[in-house]
Image (cartoon, rainbow, N blue to C red; front, top):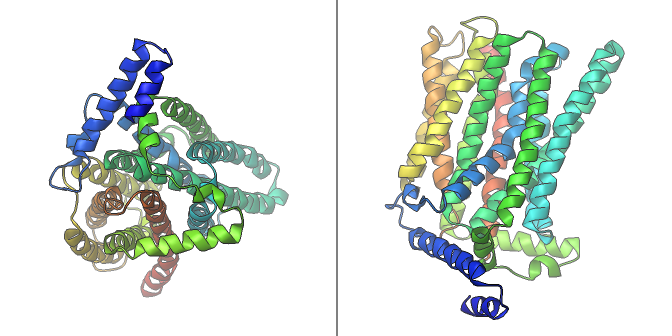
Length: 442
């Protein structure tokens, strides 16, 4: 690093460049002093005036990385109105979540030959195109009943493409932060994910209050999402040109194997073997397993089981407010709680096991079961589920790579996202069984 500075001074670029480099180096050294395995020192201590702008940018990226899936489920009233007998919410879950897992696996094994920038920018670009594509597909519904079948299958195809692009984008962002940056920025991505869910739910409430035209409402969702994603792309390109980001990235461990392994089967064999070796670290395996379990618990309940609750408020308001309550708890867990306290592995295991009681409570709150007499029971269980989901997942993913060497940290980031998407897919599958059981006992 000192040789690098000497070469730039010798090239005559001037004192201004040297001052910028010194400031960036000081920025990194301060973060390195805080970037320790000691969880008694909260993540909040890593946040300083010098890195707060970069931290907020990663919160912004986290919002963009999950915006499509939240927009799709926020527009569920629109889809159900067009396809009242096809259960589009379940169909979208079946298509989107498994492909999210498959895309994360493909990115882990074969995507790493491409740069972080190329994968992130291309992933966000495809997501923006898909958001605009939903608006164009709406024209199929307007042309009459003869087009509805084509519209439904086109919708599922678009959701599948979106899931693959989202998987590449999400897993690459987390691979980048675990590979080259302190855990503060991983927590920033997670906080952005929570904020996105909250903001989209608030948007759903506003559109539900202000318009009954579901087509116009859907245009708000999809058009605003496309515009937001374009802003995320611009912000990311600006970040990568910054001195602080460049210093982090240049100092991170890299391997020529990412580009030397040309044959697809060679890459599959090598990176599958590498992932299995890294999972032999007890710390990493436990974090990945718990991430899968926590996310599966969430997707057993949200959105499938919770939407079975009787609409105490009428006009579809109770399920919407349940999602709002969940998202408020989720943001609090990812933000203030995770900033000041990160679960140790021992407490994470205990908290995850106790969450099965919360899931059972939600199920018992579905009519006509024991706790269904008052809506407050389900709202309380859903709030606790959201709070614990945000806190646990952020605690686990922020430090998942802390005990592995060098370039293996990047692989841990991919494995963490792969674990989350596996939990989403498996939780969605189990939710069918839970829904069937609740229907039979109703």
